[in-house]
Amino acid sequence: MSFREKSAWVTLITLIVLSLAFALHLPRPWTLHPEPSGFMFHVLLIAIGTFIAIEVIAHIAIAVWSPRDANSPKDEREILIELKSTRVAAFVYAFLSLGSVSFGLHIASANAIGIAYLILISFVAAEIINYAMRVFYYRRGS
Amino acid sequence: MGNTNIENRIRRLRFDHDEMTQQALAERVGVTRQTINAIELGKYSPSLEVAFRIARVFGVPLEEVFSYPESARQPSES
Image 1: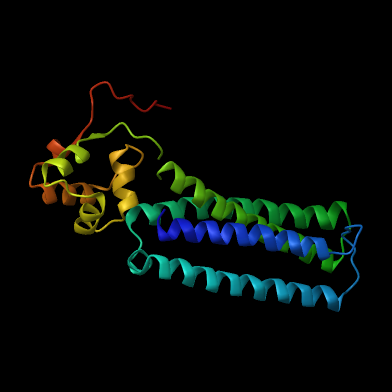
Image 2 (image 1 turned 90 degrees about the vertical axis):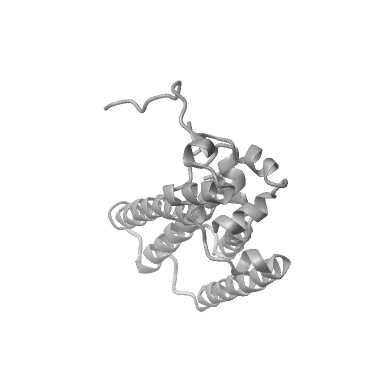
């Protein structure tokens, strides 16, 4: 497994785990009319900080494991995989973000915080799709 | 991309050149070992430049490394 494939796995697993952990801290029942919450803002900051910390530590670890691979530039296949997966993620993000905002405003009458959560979910879902597609293309060959 | 119609004799050529490893070939061509592996298995079609570099490593013409069989499926016209 190349460094960049391992990197994709690390980011994918981290995104999924932290997204689930963040979702578990959301007040129940889940609603698109949440009250402003300093607690949730802090949870979000902790989730972002934890994501960054895990990414840095994990990437240092896998780079130490294969330093030559980590320091080599991306080859054409890796660039192609990144472009293809990012293209898919862009479509997902565009569809989810516009769709969820439209849904929130016109159907669910969501408040501003609810809209913000929908956009955040759209972004995270698109990134999960992005790295899942990278893993898929790496496993398939391209 | 996935599986490609292009066939190659890279593994054979590596064996004939002092059992060159995929890693050694990758370093000389300027790609990763995984890319060489994907090319050998027909899972990835290299760019023209990489194909020429591979042929140059082995000192043979491009056609001796890669071939496009007559039986290959043609892309459907739409």
